[in-house]
Picture 1 (cartoon, helix red, strand yellow):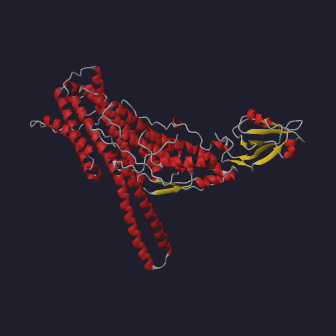
Picture 2: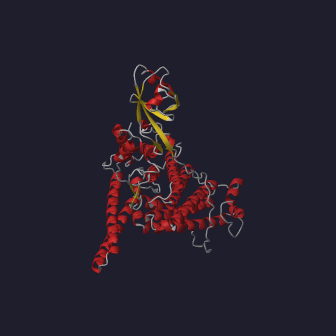
Picture 3: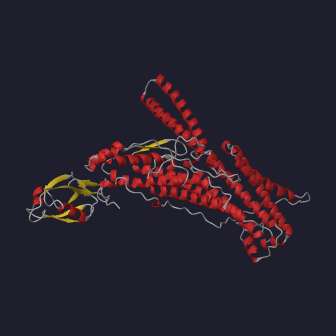
Length: 579
């Protein structure tokens, strides 16, 4: 059964977005072609008048390109389309849009290869070629669910067979694969099948980010699904980084994939924090310390993402809204950590227990100056002061998160994010105001840095390609170990054999395909031109490339009363062994 892509004309919010992306990609492509032409003319001409006109044209094209790239950035930053439809408030996650690709028709190239390399009538494989083309067309618009992932995985796995069957080191198939950069829309074109495979793998990762972002993270089931999706996205990008090099587009470069892996890991860590919040129902000292350390861990991993995004190649490439969102989350979760530290210190529950004291002694990165932490724990006034310092730290960080948020036009449009930042800021401010007594003459100290810790370290789940089993579409060409692009076959010879007193005068060995192991000197097989080492590919025009030894013997014996027509081919060389 053929897996289908989404209807590309369906008027859903997401398909409209993909449509606009595709249109902008085409316009960028057109402008870049114009720019290349103008640059060539500028270099070639010696006429100053022409140079001036071309320079003007170039500045116009460059300005158009800049506008198109800005428009595409806004689309790529449209996180809300990919978020959950739930009514509950969650900080939005960053999903990736899929890489777009042009239609590609391999029909003529595969037909030529079948004729020339396999010496077969290519029209016999029209059905297989059509099936491959339909699969490629469908995977351009995968649905945002398990079926969409399976469709991409099916095409990816099928490319293994396409590579073995039709891509030879001696000859290029001549197919051009066109893909657009996921973030900038800049087109890239290569004839290497590895580029096609890598781009499909990138889209598997991107689809996982969209599935993760759409989960309702107000239930533990939804959070676990989001964690699984983001870990699999990280795994896909990491696999791509380790197994595909020299990609022509920046989104598939090592620095970009490293950034995406870190971003996914940070989003997993954020989901882990959300689950801790969902399952922590009390405000006890120990519980609140754990929550604070989980929030500090989220802030730390987003700090790592921020560092990766500021690397030279990435600085001007990553959308400004992503950089802003990561910075906002750094500040926001650091503020949340300070807030819960304050709640722990200001809680009135009895924390004389050994566990609580032990946890508090390991709570900070560095032991703060002043009285020992064990003394602070038993002195209500000292606890209040340290709690107030944490609240002040929380308010400052919340205000910074709001400031960064306000500088980004795209984030300002995100009401959900605005609501979360404002609400948490308000909570910290109210609690701080309650403690800010007029007679409090001591200047509030700076809160010590909280040591981050997590109950669950994110995993990078590598792609499991075996989950989608595929059958080689071009199975009929014969067993892949021999009938592949790397094997060089002589032309198929048809010989007629007549049974004599000594049989056919040959011995056979092996299965699929059966090998002529020996030819009796002076026998009818030798006279007909059969040679040791020939492979039998058909008997009486009936294909037997997949036939077992016994089947071929039976077919030959059934013709004992007449001349039997045997089609044979000689394997001249085999470049590399196919696994």
